[in-house]
Each structure stands twice: as structure tokens, then as C-alpha cells.
Amino acid sequence: MRTWRVGTFSMGASLIFLGIFLFVSKLSGFNLAHVMMGWWPLLLIVLGAEILLYLLFSGQEKPVLKYDILSILFIGVLGTVGIGFAILSTSGIMGKVEEVVAREERSFSLPDFSYQTDESIKRVVLRPASYQLTIEATDEAEVSMFGTYRTQASRDKVIVSQVDEYVSATKKGDTLYVNVKTLPNETGPFYSHQEVAATILIPKDMKLEVIGNGNQFNLKPRALENDWSIHSASSLDIEVEKESDLRISAVGITDVFDEDSEWEVTETSDSGSEYEGVERNAVYQSGDGTYQININNTHRISLITNQ
Image: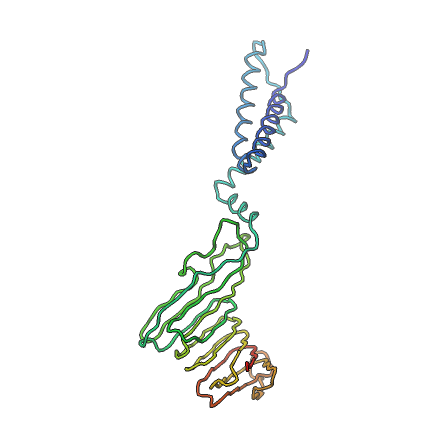
């Protein structure tokens, strides 16, 4: 006489139900993780029903349950996987994992930033995040910023949708303080690399102080009519007009590049610092040098002269 072991029917029924769920999800485009989260409770229902049916139809006065160990283990593994998916979904980790898997390299436009200036503002202090930026003098009476950024993101997600998410401007006395923020990003294993290519326009008759954070800057002073100062940049590429009335003074520079050798460079020993080496002071002048760009605590500078 054949012996009925509890678990055999449950395993068979579970495989049938799982196959049906997967087949329907494939046709309907359902998420596999959502299928696993919604399907696994059926295991408990089928297994419980099998035990009740065995007790009801066994025909014994004191029926003894006999289990198919292999089938029970199989059901346990499927149930554990389903419970795991449910826990990950409840904690929010599953959603993050799905988002990371769906990521792709995408480029976005930064929302345009603009701050109208007037005669009460004499100076702009710029504190940029650690991105590569272009700073350019303009005829317009406003401080503005625009550009693009590239990062890994899903198709339906925009990292920056409002101006105040990446830049802020505060006026104190005669000074406008502009802070460029680090773009929103995930931490830990969900971090994504970001690249920013942005341009900041400064009124040409406004004094500018840039307090860097190891940034790479591209300076375009054009027809500058006031003084600029740049602190703590990793490198500076400076484009100047041949007929500009400009003097550029760089102090304590490691490397100086100039395709036309128009810098006046003097070298000083750096033996008193922690890392011995040679520092260079460099000066470039065009015209009478009425307006000045002062550079310090910067590793590398290069000069391009436009005709």
C-alpha cells in the first residue's frame, strides 16, 4: 500500500503555482521580485491544506504524520527566498537595488541660475563644489550659471530639478556670496559618479573672489574691468585677449605652462615645507595691467592668448 508523505503534494502544487505566476508575469511584464513577494504565502496555504487533508482522509484512529523531508526542504527554501524578498522590500533596499540595476549613463541640463546685480553689490565671493567650472566675465548686470551634468540614473529620475538644489546666493552688505553645492547623490553601494560641466558668468566690472576646493577652473576674463582673486585651485587654464588691459600674478605655483612663453617666471626653494621642492612665481601682463588676477595656493596654471 502506498504511503502518503506530507510535503510531496505541496511541492508539486508549489511548482505548478510558481510556473503559472512566472508565465503570467512574463506575459504581463510584472516585476519578478514582486511576483516572489506575492507568491510565497501560497506555500503555507498549500502545505497546511495537505496536512489537514491527510488527517481527514487517513482513515486511522490516531494518524501519524509522515513527512517527505526533501519536499519540505524545497518548500522551505522557496519560502525563505520569498520572505527575504518581502523583508528587503519593506526595508526599502529592494527598491534601491531595482533602481541601481535600471541605471544608465545620462546627461541632464542644470536649471539656469540668475541673480540680478545693482550698484549696491561691489563684490562677489564664489565658493564652488569640487567640480570643473568655467568662470567668464560678461557685459550683463547679473551673476548667472548654467551647464550640464552627467551621472548614472534611471530613465524616470531627474537628479536636479530646482536651482536651489545646486546653488545658493546670499547678499550681505556690499557682497554677494554664491555657493555652488554638491549635487544630490546616494551613499554607500548606491553611490554614482557625477561629472559637471558648468559656466558661471560674472559682471566684468565686479570684483570677484573665488575660494576653491581643489577645483579645476577655466578662466575667461575677456574685457575685465575689475580685479579677480583665485584661491586653492588644483589647476587653472586662463584664456586672455591679446589686447586686454590685464596683469596676472601667480604665487607659489608648482607648474607653469604657456604655449608662447609669455610668463615671467621666478623660482624659489620650498625647503621649509613638509615636502621639499621648487615653487614658482609667475607674472603675465597685457597692456598697462590695470586690472589684476591674483592666484595663490594653486598647483598648475596655463595661459592661452587669443589674438
